[in-house]
Image (tube, rainbow, N blue to C red):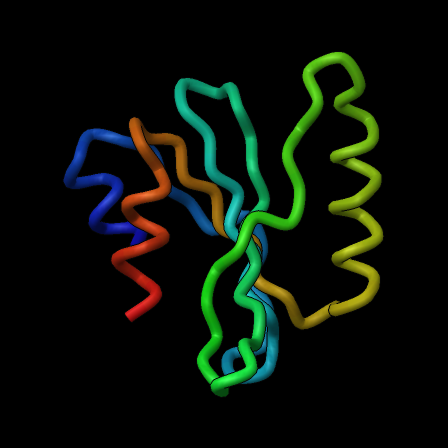
Length: 98
């Protein structure tokens, strides 16, 4: 995912490294630093785990998003946090789901 975003001219980085095999992967996506969304891999009834948006940043109250991220990290100290800043970031989430 990181290499694909960078190859497309975007910015990608690991903000926080977690447990190699046990931590949940949280992906922050944005376009030009705006429209931030948090994606998490969620279990489905058929056993698959797909990425779903669990939070969108409210530009009028960015503190709520930061507080949610802080709580989320506390719930899973082994979690990974990846940031993608690229045009149409959803396509990279879809590509990595398979």
